[in-house]
Amino acid sequence: MEQASAAASARLLRADADGLAAAVAALDAGRLIGLPTETVYGLAGDAFATDTVAAIFAAKARPADNPLIVHLADEEELPRVTEQVTPLARSLAAAHWPGPLTLVVTAAASVPAITRAGLSSVAVRVPDHPVATAGLQRCRSPLAAPSANRSGRPSPTTARDVLGEFGSELALVLDGGPCVVGVESTVVDARGSRPVVLREGGVTREQLGVSGEEAAGELQRSPGTRYRHYAPGCRVRIAPAGQVDVEVARAVTAGVHFGAVVHRDHADHLPPTATVIDTFTDAPDLARRLYTGFREAERAGVELLLVEAVAEEGVGRAVMDRLRRAAGVA
Ligand code: AMP
Ligand code: MG
Image (cartoon, rainbow, N blue to C red):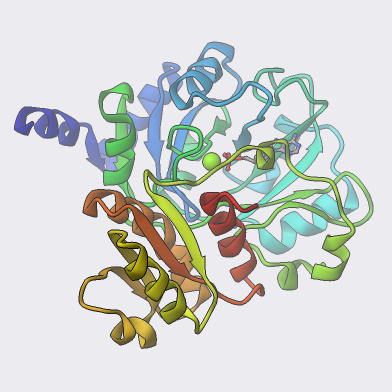
């Protein structure tokens, strides 16, 4: 056990000049690394190398029809992945890059079919993290970097959690500290004249100027949102805001070993038998803590994790989307 963790930690590199050089060498050699971004840690590899992209799909056990996001160092690199930058894509990129917004654009032939799961479009983003940016600037190719977890599992938001997920399978993991957003990027189809939100994420509808009501009529979704996702190895139940007591009473009556992630002001209401996994102050704070909470619940060995709901506004929409998927009620 000790040996295993020593081996695992040997691949965890500080994101200093040496760490970055090792990361870039690995990426240019077609290997996979764990890369921090502001959303979650990515399982990064050369987006233009077919074998490398195949290795990403294999490592994650990701369905082949779930396309990857291609990461660029900056907006100027867009011509590497598309020949058709619509005025909408241009203005969204100007407003939100670098940042947690992914744009779906018409793909250039340079993007391998495997990366885009055979679609004529490609998803592209410029992350807002100094380590990701430094890596992207130095690498030969743009990077495909889906979340560094096995398909269906919670995304990792710390370098340690990437190691826990993949251990020896990666060339290395760059440690860029905990992710400041904590949920994945918002995916927007930018091929038309107005933004169509395909997945909720770190950039809010309010920031995009797209209302929730409009969304209700939109049936389009990202291919990836078809799959059950983000789930830890215990059951997850959403406790309506302010009604944690009701769900707690149910769990106590049922004799279930449960943990809870609740608003800080509600932690005192929990019975001593409950394991407080974490507390939060608001939706952005829960976004940062959600996936670490899931993993902590696994480590604590609880059967059930109660998570208090937040309002469906701002980043709260993305949080509730992930929670519903984890709870299996999406
Ligand atoms: P992940 O990298 O796991 O956070 O997932 C990326 C998300 O982007 C998934 O929901 C994909 O289905 C979505 N996506 C990637 N490429 C495309 C595309 N070309 N069109 C629509 N959605 C996409
Ligand atoms: Mg993912």
